[in-house]
Image (cartoon, rainbow, N blue to C red):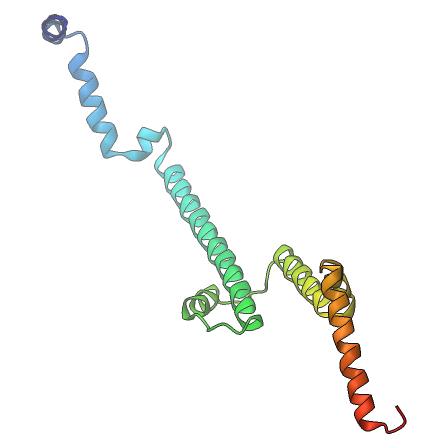
Length: 160
């Protein structure tokens, strides 16, 4: 019922000529000239469009550079862990064009991982690993090693 009432009232208002038809004509004219729709002159609008295009190009270049940095990091990690190379990463680096380095923050993370791995491989790392082992296991291994050494010495030495 309310729909019927609205449609009848709106059609009556349009018929009276209170400006309903004129607004539609203005809207159609504004769509033809985007500069006028934005409230700018033609030169201002063209300059604005140039700025928008330049900003987009800068964003795209920065995105490609970041993408190349990540690809460089992946290539570095692949070399470190002797994994197969990825042509996708190599293409991303070539697309960036200039010499791309690993970002400083990522470089620090990789360096920290390398230091941790070196510590685990060192003698101190092995000693710390021994602390995590069961004392009975360590005692058994030591006794077995001592027994092996004693037997070897008895076989080689006639005095013992």
